[in-house]
Length: 226
Image (tube, rainbow, N blue to C red):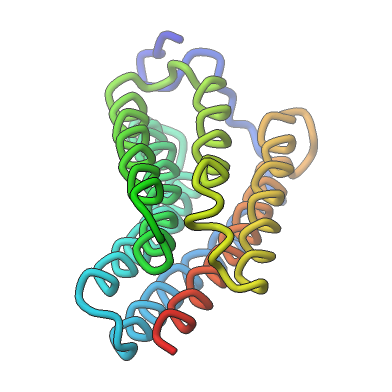
């Protein structure tokens, strides 16, 4: 996909109504508050647990990814149309990969039981790094492929089910699964461009799914420190 003179991906239309922007802005405001407060809270919680520095660092990586993704998403979606908006779009899409890898990091570090778990984590970060590079350096290209890659990367935990997922508490496992389903269903609205309030609905699904995965990480931190 080629870029227009202002850096906009060719064919990308940004014509949301004032009410749609207000709805989307409200959801993003909630996301920013949640990202900052939640990230700080879970990092402090991990520091108070007898987990060791490596475990705390893994939670800090997750907290940073959480706040960064929600903050940049809000900035991009609320920014006026112009060249800077399309630069923010690159970062917004790249940080989705960071969020996926950041979420896996504390889960594997805290409950991973064998080499397969850490091989999974290495693979997730490698793919995320490639995805980030593509989004930053090749904007507007492979967008549909990227959506599929987001989903595949997010569900890749099944490859190490016995050594990671199965070791989570039942509540953490339920939240992880519900979050994955919410993300996956939300993609339908992400690509349904003609639907009124499409962008706000998509971001509502993202925020709900992110909250579920936050619950998974938090419960895992508490369980690991018990």
